[in-house]
Image (cartoon, rainbow, N blue to C red; front, side):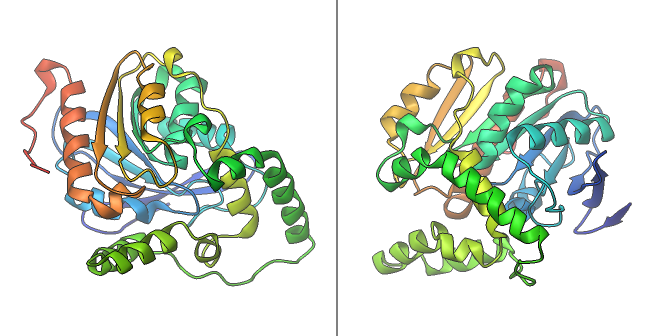
Length: 310
């Protein structure tokens, strides 16, 4: 089943053997030969609207199939049953099969970056490259986030309890819709003073705000999965672009750079923001990704990249 949405983008569904339906959207390449597919992965308590602005403005449109997905339990994808990094990774592999892509470059923010790393270990031959936007490494976490990471087993247990209550009929019937493109637009309008900036950080890191649009079991499971140990960077042979916020809202940037420096093929760049580069510096993020993706193409399969000066 598919329907047309915004200019050239197609909404599709993936049906999994256990009965789950996964929602995703594809902007198909129009140029020939087409480049490798890009799969865009959202973060904690998020959905595929995280990437709306990126898809609309990226110079990669037309040259690559661009796929953005609602991870199982998020957005338009069904909630029922348990899920986590392995389940999400297998959903992605099935999606690539459905779209007839042997490989893809995975682009993930925060929890989405964790998924990209786990996919690269679980389905290694299918990960042509990774773009990691503020991935999570427990050793780099600071303050209450380090403490929260130590509670990951308890979070996982709480998620199971809440799911059981849901099965018994105890659940919220209505959630607020979450359009991250619109939320980002409003946030950028507000970022004009120190007070507004502080309010922005509170809103974008607020569990209470996230829970208005995310089921409790999903939120708890997201947290537990986000804090799981990723594969050892030294074991990942594919090229990786890591975009790191310099605001140190959640993690120590020195430790982050040292950890990511263990990747055999790493390109590291710093974005001047807190932890939400796609909200705070969207053009800069797009330009960095466009340049890096263009550099991964074989010399005979490149077209000039649009120059965007951050």
